Length: 101
Image 1: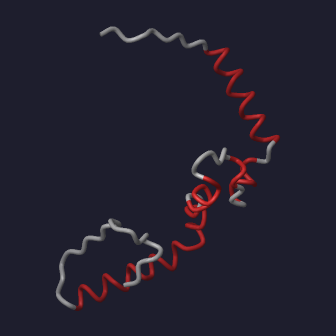
Image 2 (image 1 turned 135 degrees about the vertical axis):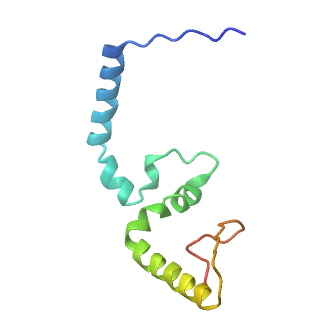
């Protein structure tokens, strides 16, 4: 099976990149992303609730210190109990943020 050929034209690609980049700037996309503005994406069938919940990673810089303190406390507890290895797996319905140690 032969794959279709694609042509790459640097000048055309650069112009497209600059046009899209300027549109993002004009739309204040970065500010809106950090504000969790769901209107940056088409809602479609998923709806804005799904989009909003998928933006929770933006909270990570504010929460990582607290989460790492909890991980450190878990490690200390496991070591005190004689464990040498600890494996954390994010499987299941709970997210890392929701899980209580």
